[in-house]
Image (cartoon, rainbow, N blue to C red; front, side, top):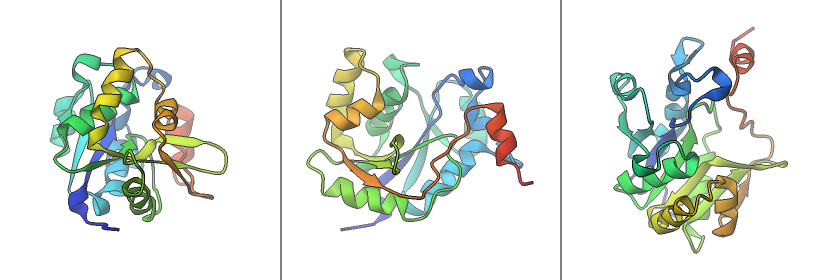
Length: 194
């Protein structure tokens, strides 16, 4: 299997409304002096040719940090599936690697293993899981998935984990990997060095 960066565009999902954070733009929050979006970018950068941020606000702020931005278009604020669709529409590579904007450090093997699995999957889909549950915002998606994503969004079927399962995505288990992301102000406090 190829692990060439030219196969992957990184897509950071930052289009949510951050309700549990008081409605702020979560990817722009700083943890230990660094915007959350940069942690996600650091996880992706070794594996991808380019990085896009999917956001529905704060475009100028993300651009000042050096990121190209794509929004949800006609599916604004419809959740991660809309962000994944925006990513596959904008990508110039056969696959996208997705990350939540609030994902802290991940082991280096996560995205190469997901790409391997996606290349061996009939629909070009692989999604991370741990021993307990699926982590649908850590995945590799073939850009050919656009029609299926559009169909689900048009029918208001917005559950991203369910979409992966219905499409027969390969679930890659990373036992012991902490997929914990930052959802609340308490999570930010916990992420600070003691």
